[in-house]
Length: 388
Ligand SMILES: Cc1cc2nc3c(=O)[nH]c(=O)nc-3n(C[C@H](O)[C@H](O)[C@H](O)COP(=O)(O)OP(=O)(O)OC[C@H]3O[C@@H](n4cnc5c(N)ncnc54)[C@H](O)[C@@H]3O)c2cc1C
Ligand SMILES: NC(=O)c1ccc[n+]([C@@H]2O[C@H](COP(=O)([O-])OP(=O)(O)OC[C@H]3O[C@@H](n4cnc5c(N)ncnc54)[C@H](OP(=O)(O)O)[C@@H]3O)[C@@H](O)[C@H]2O)c1
Image (cartoon, rainbow, N blue to C red; front, top):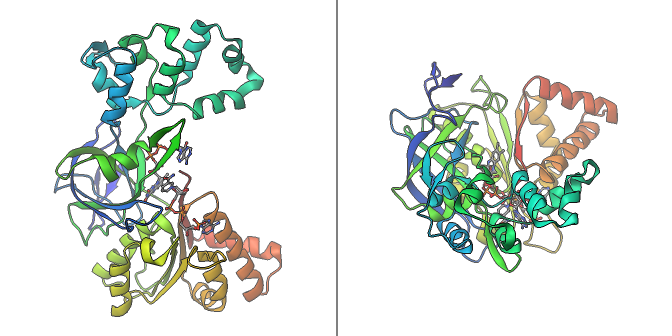
């Protein structure tokens, strides 16, 4: 596979899941205030001159390591110190602690449930493997981590090697790159929403968002590689206008777009629609965005703070309020980009786009569907959306 370079030329890409780049965390700062319901962090990582390259719109794949405190609890639960030698699932000797740092321990594998079915003699667990019982198996697995399973089923006869054998593969996590490559050569920035919740009376942490947002220390090394987004790219013609819809962490690639268009002196207009819960605590990158607005680089900034009033105001409500102008931008050739939550926001933004086409393009619902399809086909409607 080829890799984009900041200058636009292409070179062989040596960095991948099998051969990740050893990068270094260089800076981190909170983007949300301490009183916020959220913890969103700006992360800076040094890639140096030899590291992976990227274009605005690409993502960074990060290979996390598990929380050391959780590993200690798991080891303690089976009476191990963590220093025991085990054969790692990929082969070769390792310690239990190192294996647990690099395998999936916050979810339980099918192999682990199979072991429970084989050893604990509970008919309810055996029935989880009936072909028509897939939902129950998924529910059993989603509500538990490895520590829960070890505590609930102590009679399995857990040993360090047995625990090692039933851990699944720890997958890398993708993050939309938040820096313009030409604005920050040799660096990559991310906007990470730290995931945490409570279950079974215990605090739970999202593996990679906690690793990046809390656990890594400045100067620590981490493994990563870039993921090239073929269908989330700035327009080739720098005079093209862009409309960016990115609430919450969906702002990330648009910081990259704005920086890149500023560095390369792109002449097209830039319109950003951003939203989050409260202006006072969750206005991510407000200083940078307000400076870009003041300088004229950010032509329009429309904000939707959902919880600053009785009724919810979301980005799609701002789209609808300014529909005539949005329609004029799109008719004038603007590209429309959406990033962030796939489950609710991206669907509602899409529905609003169809309504705007019906009202301002005087189209029937079917014509609006065809118009949006054509916009996508022309790569003028691009989305980078995800469900956490
Ligand atoms: C293309 C792409 C771009 C992305 N860009 C970004 C980005 O810019 N910024 C960003 O922050 N994220 C981004 N993500 C999401 C990111 O990849 C991770 O999914 C996210 O950080 C969570 O990973 P984690 O390892 O911290 O959590 P995990 O350890 O994977 O845990 C998440 C899981 O925890 C469980 N969970 C979470 N909350 C609860 C709850 N309240 N109750 C019960 N269970 C719960 C759910 O099962 C959920 O699936 C992106 C994803 C994709 C695919
Ligand atoms: N569990 C955790 O600790 C945790 C931490 C961070 C992120 N996450 C998850 O990560 C994903 C992204 O989180 P995020 O912080 O980037 O942003 P987010 O949760 O998507 O929220 C950003 C803004 O979008 C609003 N919103 C909610 N529903 C919407 C809809 N249908 N249309 C338009 N806007 C809508 C939110 O309002 P309201 O919230 O007022 O509805 C908020 O103002 C979400 O799925 C979130 O649940 C979880």
